[in-house]
Amino acid sequence: MAVNLERSDLLFYRVDPYEIHYLKFVLEAYEGLATLTTLDSATGLIQLAVPPGRKDSLESLLEALGRELGLERVTAP
Image (cartoon, rainbow, N blue to C red; front, side, top):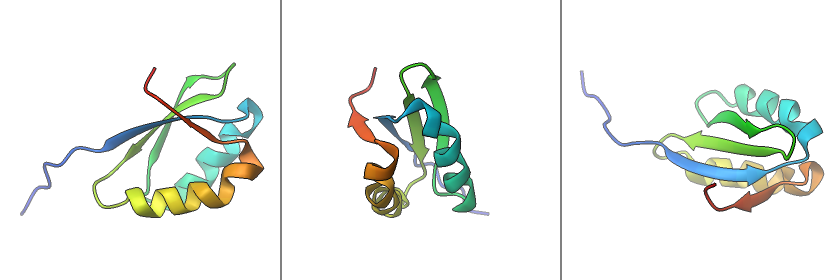
């Protein structure tokens, strides 16, 4: 059995804090696309761990949802 040793990319975003649960729900519907971790629920700071080869798909989805959720890419905290 081959094992993929590539690491996930970590991306950081700010989102309207009231929309974190919705974004997590959407990401769970796209199984294996990304894992969302809330870093600061008061400011809406989140981390997305993106498996190798899924970054383009995730960015397409986030672009579509960006305005609706008030999504903003930020540098690592």
